[in-house]
Image (tube, rainbow over all chains, first blue to last red; front, side, top):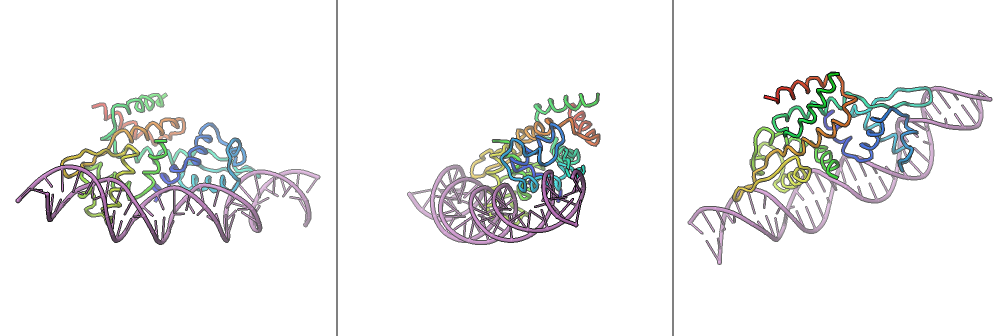
Length: 104
Length: 104
DNA sequence: GAATCAGATAAGTCTGTGCTTATATGACGT
DNA sequence: ACGTCATATAAGCACAGACTTATCTGATTC
């Protein structure tokens, strides 16, 4: 179940930090480790979880593997959230405004 | 960290099922158990986690405790999602339309 | 093709967490 | 006040998962 993979992937603070880094620009696994106290295998495992959750996707570039945010995961979360729109508070108006901006 | 509590709370499929039930209408803990193979203490513990994540809130009603969706948790997720709006795919247009409907 | 480097996988350990049974709390009816 | 019912808490167990070190794969360069 992809929804399960998604929330489980985001439940780990290290993985959210990795995702946030990638949101600031795509990087390979080694560059991602810069500034984080994390072993190479740990990073690789985290990336595998994020990839499986469709939050991140890879693109082989020779010896390196470039990682970037996969919009699909975000869309899935948005879809989950949309199911509960009846309960969204007025505060979510901010989000609606952001979406309006997206219209260009 | 509330963000952590949020995603950790949603990472469990049983808790998501409970949340979904509550989204269809507020209920007390005993009613929530109907149709779920889950012990009373397990339900109580799950509700505590959801409460702590601001996904659910309680309202004592005599001997019963009525539970309902807490919009705050949903707003927090929406806020998290909004940080990555640069990556939202066109598919999220559907979400935008839903938000437009919310305007009444 | 051998050495090197980026990254993935394997195997083991340790902590976190979801469950259980047992017990406590707190509100109601009699 | 006492028994009962709804829910919470305690304590213990078992499994999931995040980490480690060691090893493998696969691409680059010489």
